[in-house]
Image (cartoon, rainbow, N blue to C red; front, side):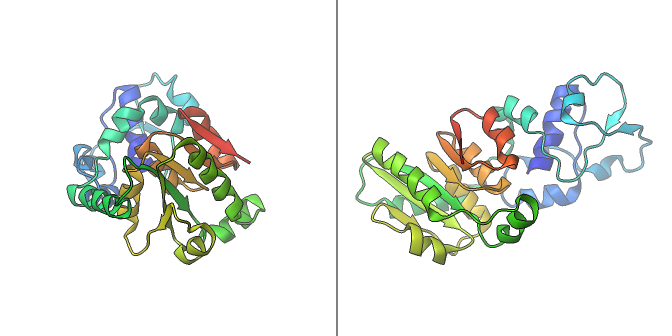
Length: 242
């Protein structure tokens, strides 16, 4: 998603025609409606191209007529934040995902008048080694989530927490309460759509949860590690928590 969005915002900022690899379009088409609006890279595979690779700061001052090639896993957070509303329109969920998300939220909130949904995204299994290797840190404890949940409990009387995770057993043991539900068994695409249909977000780390928070809008609390600082400073109502 970051690669697709970055190509689109760079094209918009530099008045160029965007192209993305077919594999990205194919992967996103099953989740979102509008991603085929950007043509695949194969359309220009036989064209001679003079290109250059630029970072985000250089992009804003770019004046040459050369094509621009973006590296894999690129994240131009500043440009995406600047064009956030238009960027999110690129990623309109497929109807079946939205309908199921709304059905799930309606079911779990039965009996609650005007519920305020807060998604709680907990990433654990694949991040344990990643955090240790890159940041020399361990997975954060349940206190991070509980303190943020208490914030929303104090703010809204009708709050309902929707917990989504790659480790639902841990979440059920640590975070389950009368005003929370731990969902499991859905696809990653469905969980992202559920986050998008919530009002606010609590997340620990990872680009997946950040996209869910951007879709939802509202307030977002996320753990303060270096990879989160830049985007948190750019997004309205995002709070870094150490």
